[in-house]
Image (cartoon, rainbow, N blue to C red; front, side, top):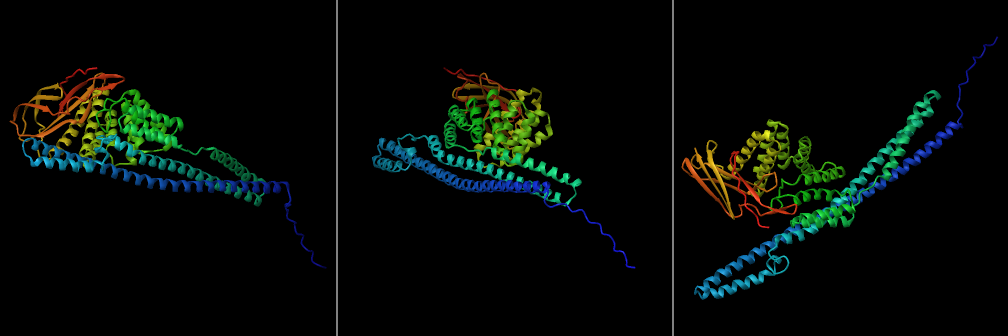
Length: 543
């Protein structure tokens, strides 16, 4: 009897040629083709990014070289002009001596005149042309070339960065396509009941990839026409020459060519503030007062620029200051802190942050912020910059006192720290006069001089005295403090008595300015150390 052979169960074998497999194969082929198209687009975007990046590097080198050449040419012209002036003065002295009977001086005067004439040809500032004795015009015209080169670099950088972002997005889409292909391939290795958990996610990913690729393709790449850059260059030139309204018009022209041009928006904001500021004729680099309408317009322009550029230090800095003037202290503090995070070196964002913190009532943090700003100001090597930074801090603190009268005590405390630091910088070894009392303060404006008189008591020998003068055009709420309206001294006076101080020329009431088409005069206010009272005097301005 033979053993019965076991029966073997025949496994279920899925047919290779089925409608599902044919559909899946077609889907995989189309998806692979789509991935290849996206990969090609990513490669093209990368090539464009690389080419434009190289253009930006070349433009950067050109901008730097042109700026260096411009600076060298300008200062060479300026030095030659000073040399000509020196020779001419020597000739004038010799001529005067010759007129007094010194015959030998007559020949010397002619030699000095000849030498000056020979050197005159080496500087357009010393000649009789359009730049004669006009350094500002020469600098503005020379600056146009490097300015245009810098704008071309910025435009190339912006376009290159946009293509780079396209490339990164398209590489991300290719990665998702690879994930979808993997899921589709796995669907062939599982049963029908599990298959849908792989196919539907793959289909969803494919839909996202197709929609994302269409969005990336239609996303515009910024391009800055040469005409827009030239309009900004014209605006920068007019700004340097003090024609702020003309600069506003040129920046507006650039924005009609490219409405989202960040450089035009960034330059338009300070030009708008300057065009409406009583400080526009003072020669100050740091401007702290303008009209509310101008601040609101500047905020709108700077926010538009920020949406294009992302976090940008000058834009954040200017926005932090502008929001303070419209009494939006929270945004002022937040934007100023963002500016500090980007660049913690300069003092201005700390000053803006300190103002906002004082306005919000955070006294201890505001004092720490101001103390840090003071240390940065004292470390600056340029005396003019230090003066203007101290003046800017005092001006904006007075604005805060007007905005929030209840903060007056805090404002005076910070002003005292600023004035004490500036005084100590001027006379580091003189004793402090912190216990001195001041009374009977009077100020008189007698064009072109400004006279200050006061009675004092308890002044130590050689004590530091600081005279801080504010002005404001009639009709304006803000007081303006200028560095050239200050005076510091360390002098041996009797412990008690009276003092008269005639301020020299150029420190009297600033030249009349035109606000909204009207010529206005100035008011004065004096502040002695932390003195809160002040005498005021006005003078009438013809016209």
